Image 1 (cartoon, rainbow, N blue to C red):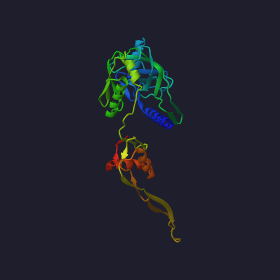
Image 2 (cartoon, rainbow, N blue to C red):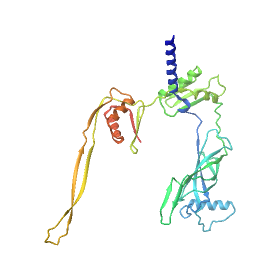
Image 3 (tube, rainbow, N blue to C red):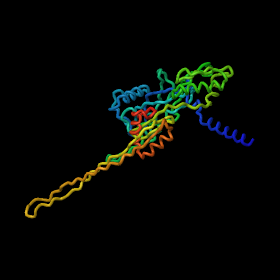
Image 4 (cartoon, rainbow, N blue to C red):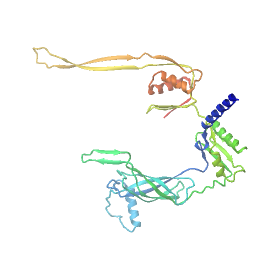
Length: 367
C-alpha cells in the first residue's frame, strides 16, 4: 500500500510539472477584432525656450502659424515672423480595442523640422485620425521629454537620449468609438502569433476537450475557427473560459545569429549529426624598432634613423573534435561547442559551416 501511495504521489507530481510547463492560449493567440488601431496627427508645440524650429527652414510651421492666427482673428500674412519658441510635430497614438468616449490615452510627439529640443513645450489641440481619415481622438497637454541638451560658449555640447521626441501622458481624449459587438458573435477566428500546423491542431484539440464537442478546428497553420457552444450565453464568456487553457506550442528548429553583437540563440529542437570540427587561430605580430645609424667621424653627415621590423607568426594547433551523434539534443550540442573553447565570433562561423555541410538540422536566421 505504501509503495502504491508513493507511486501515485510521484505520478501526481509529474503530471503537475507537465501541466505547469504548458503555455496559456491567451499568450500565443490573438482574437479576431481585438486589436489596437494606429492614430496620427499634425500639431504644434509652443513654449520652447529658443529650441524650436526656424521659420526660414520650416515652411509648414510658418503656414500653420499664419492659418491658426487668422482663425483667432490675428492677421500675420505679411508680417516678418521670427520665433524659435514653436515646433512642428507629428503626434501618434494607439487606440485600444473597445475604448469608449472620454477614455484618455498616451500620445507620442516627434519633431518634424530642425527643432533642437521639445523640453518644456505644450502641445496645442491636435485631432488624431485613423486610416479611414476620420478623427477618433483629440490631443493636448505638456510634453514630457526624458532627455537633455547642454552646451557652452566654446561650442561644446552634450546630449543624452533624444530631446526631439517626447510623450504626453493621458494627453488624448477619445471622441469616437470603434464598434465591435464581440459578445453577439457566433463564430470567430483565433490567430496564432507563430503559425504552425501542430500548434493550431493542439489548440483546437484543447478547446474541443474542454467543451466536450466539436467547437473548434484548425483551418490553416495560422488560424483556428471557433463556434460558440449553446452552453455559453455569449462569445465573451466563452473566450474568457478557453483563453486560460494550456498547451505545449511546437517550435521550429532555428538558430538566430546577430553578427553585430555576437549573440546566438538556439531553439530546443536544434539537432546536429556526427561531424568532426577543427578550429585554430593564426596570429601575425609586427613590431617596429627604430635604430640609429651613426656616420663616420670625418664627415658632416647627420645620424639617420633606420627602421627595423620584426615579424612573428604564431599558429595555434587546431584540435579535431567530434561533435554530435545521430541528432544530439540541445544540451549536448552546447556542451560540445563549449568544449572547443571558441569565441562567439568563431561559433557563428562554425554554425554556418555546419549548416553548409548538412550536419545542422535547423534553419539559420542572421539578424
